[in-house]
Image (cartoon, rainbow, N blue to C red; front, side, top):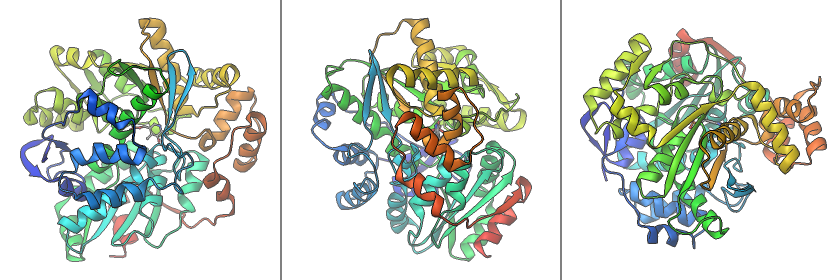
Length: 497
Ligand SMILES: *Cc1c(COP(=O)(O)O)cnc(C)c1O
């Protein structure tokens, strides 16, 4: 199986090359040339396997240049029992009726990013061994909060790698910041920037595609790669849990083989929901994909009108991991849906970077709308949803998950859709204790972060994840801050070159 670029169909690389390189030289994203298909019999056969077995079965279709031994080494290392707090890795919890929650936050940093970022360092080192000789891989990360920590934890002390993380100074939760600035490991650096996530992501993309920088790095025996969801190696592990969730629903008797399922995804960079789209294209009977946004609703507007327009106010919300106006992975969806027209993608992406907007033709919009529903909710709805979910079902959800639940409930009211549905739960509520506590108790309390955690535990009885509880004893190691214009210099400074 080969990969090409969304902006240049003449590009042909192996999975290992796509993963080691991260982004195509001309700025496009790597995509599989052909999406592999599974029959219903092959899907039901997955049900007998545990998560590791399911992951191997899906990943081997995409990583055809990895040997079975390499694949086993990667997957078994990533989803080891001591790394995840649930032996199911991604358990499905029934709520009521057709509503099921897919919990994706049982990994070491308590956000869904672990599902991919526990695996990516393994994939990356195997891929680098095949393609990059003995170069040191420098992982450059822009984060809206959760990717940064999950990538730091995944890559810490991984041989022949260094990792640099940039996050918006006022754009992450206190717990997210604490997780990053206390990160241990000899190959890690963290820096806050004066700017938002889009600024960080744009600067990182620019640094990646700057030839002069690449040459300077190469002279020092280093090369850049990405741990953001622009990297195929970040996306492909996420396809697995949609198959796994379908199997779990079959086992729980909520579905019969072949029945349709919906998925609701709290969306930022469009990576998670795109993985669900790949699962659907592979033959998983997903009927509707619901794209849920917070007040940064650029995707809701796009999916309703066909015009993507980032020229709008940016809101810092209580679901900061979704505070994004440039959803990078939409480029991959458009590529697959417009008949792999690379020239068209180049034109739209040029318009996006020059004027901040582009429009797709009505026929393409219709095709997209046949698969994707969209909605957004405001902060009051987030609070109300957390409150009701706890009061009615004794289920404590974080702010991002609440966005998805609220949008789903709206959608069901509107469309009367009775298809069994999984709603992705993307973070532990303890990563956003202050917002969650306020929503549950209807009171604002003047407590520090750890008192807040203790109070939320006292009020709800929900278990506090050990990795968050232990942060209290950790030392702050990083206090870097720079302007977005200076990120390039900062990269060189932090790399010591
Ligand atoms: C990253 C993240 C999201 C958004 O996922 P995308 O793949 O970027 O769309 C949603 N919720 C949480 C908690 C996240 O960390």
